[in-house]
Image (cartoon, rainbow over all chains, first blue to last red):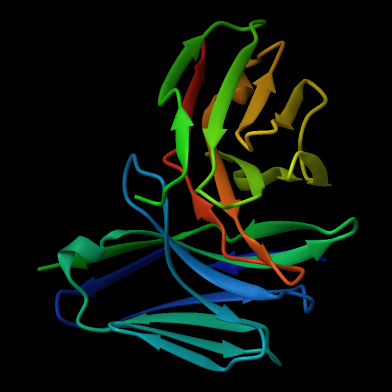
Length: 114
Length: 115
């Protein structure tokens, strides 16, 4: 089955690290993604990880993947007020016929306080 | 800027009407995807086209249809509109290499309001 879950809210102080967690259920996922959505804006691709990797680091962002537990996390180091947004994790699933789709989590609203 | 463009940005219409949303993928991307984002359903996959052919269908209503043209742009047609169709509609595109579909890049979305 396909179900992606995230906690709804996270509040951190500026300069601290943020960790946003996600669990998914479909073990056939090929890629797992993190997207950022600011108010009134579209979805910005932040980073992604291939399903056979454990970790990926990209500047302030670190993605950890625990395939056994189907758990994905996004760590943002030195969180800034500009990081305040909704963060979506998504799994990419290949479907019959050669198609592909993303299944999104509910989104985690990150609030960064001064 | 992802390179994916969508028009119009905003659309306000009445129940029972029909609208067309347009998407141009990134240069070189053959795949186009449509998603709907609403408060109660979250982000839902609607449909995937690859080089003009439908490849996958998600939670797309029968009142909705899509197509991808030879120049690779895509249109999503929504008919007999209901209040519940009010949502943000996103288009995304990706490239395919060696049978592997790549990362999906999203357009800015079209906000549809049905009154």
